[in-house]
Image (cartoon, rainbow, N blue to C red; front, side, top):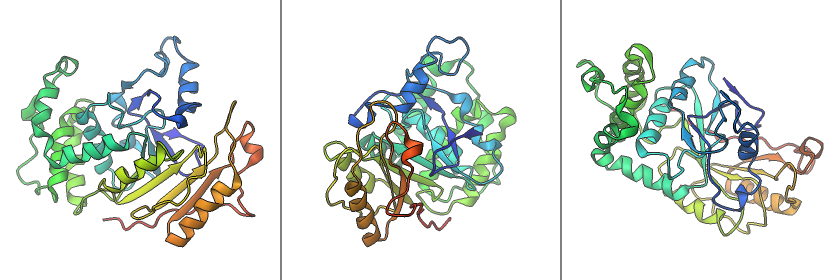
Length: 313
């Protein structure tokens, strides 16, 4: 299991590693700092530093986890980075759909790409899987399509979107699972889900400031999601009045580590009060700073650990 000390989740899952900076919230990226420490170390997962790369052997990792848990997807990357192919994102969602006992928390700074990916899925992928599987990066070790046809007695997918998801992602996932195991997982997923979007997948965007962060909220609102989350960390300025329509949780935290930018208590209180008024779950992660453990996470005499209530379907 990808153990983690992150307060709002239980585990991490990184089928993608590495990223590139896109906005001021990335300035002191903890993931980059960690990864670059191991650049050039032979055999280390981050031998290539923070360069972006797919890690398909990690796709089946959540299948080994028996106890239900919250899973932070790509704590060391961004699933919707422009260099991650649509088909690979679909493979990740296939795994999430096939594990309904877990809750997957997907956060991104590429909110527009996320919205575009869901639109791509709605269109049925436009036949892209054939082009992807014949590309140079995927030809080696190709699996026979005949081996991927599910038994005739399997029920049809309950939603059009789920059918497209499995059609696009199943072949890629199947290559990294022994014994055609994914056929069984697909059957479980299709029997479980009767609605779209998946209620065990929470989608969130980073909102660190007004210029870059606030526009992401509207992209998130227009993306199909059972639960929508704002990750306001690091909070770099007063965000003013937030439009919380369609938002289910707001996580707030200050920046930590060397060079951490200051967090003003009134910025946090403003967001908390807006969440309370709107009935949105509020989670205060940390004050941050160079010594974040000393600063703690108490706000006005208490900790705030509210989580959204979700009806699993």
